[in-house]
Length: 417
Image (cartoon, rainbow, N blue to C red; front, side, top):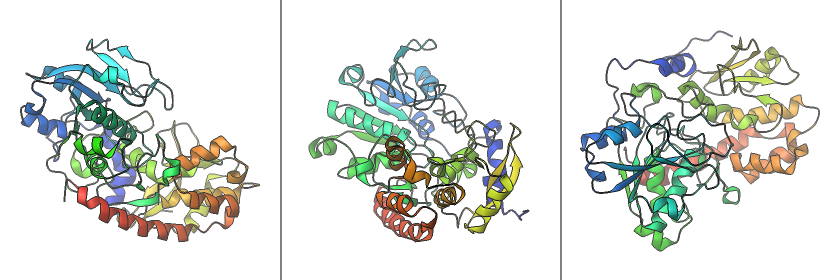
């Protein structure tokens, strides 16, 4: 099972996790939106009551919290904090509502956008003139921070408040687009905009495309067009850059994504464990990179996955920190990789290894949640009716063509050419 690793593979498979403990010995190659804002002397915030939507991954290139940067900045009046899923400090569990509170550290009110409300209320926004958004995405449509941003944009545009997005890298780079488009009948908090599952955009570019495209925001055309959006671009970031190329330290974006290795794995295996007996290592030291299947040996699962010949990936049997044996997903060539392809072969294999079709027998609520994440009714009909006979290759090719069309459309909104 040994493979000769190219430079990309060594980064993607094994060295990624080292960035979670990297020390700031030299300034990274990329200046984030918050760094550029500081270089501007924070002038875009002067004379305004500022709200900040962020979490622990909202740091500058030297690792200092954006909350602290804005609090200490002369001339900046930070009056409120807003928190996405997992809360302002990132310590809340996934899919668990978070309550409003007064932040003990800063004394500022913290409004939860993952509790009673997903969209800021008029009362919340009455206390601010502009909302600064500093959220690190992982490049996959179902990660909820983009949805949080879009709902915040809707509310701010409706209330006549300015939105200022501090841009950050897409850890998968800006050239990789892959997976099924979202059928808008499945629009939800885990899929709010019509894009392939891997969209190839930064948060600033998503915001820009939402502002400039009819139907991405749930507001009238009049409100969308007059909405006040400003993007503070990064300096030094190029579309070809993967996370390791930026020189930035990875800060966990949520409990499930403690390393950049997990951020890559999220788009590669996340959909494949939505239904059935596959698990992808959440809770171990290899989240989204460690596959197990109930009742089957790691060697059998590894052999079956290898047989599919998925480009850009290899698989090896390893033990995790819990002593479990499973299959580690190794990136051997990111350039040829179609990130979501493995997930759909996992679904096919789940049907082959199960006594029945787990997609056919799933409860309606589980089916709906699955479709909200995957986003494709056409694929659902394929796996639901054909099970182990599902033609993954046909869909992968179709999605590749769709991805190319989306990339051409979205390129008009690229901030980094």
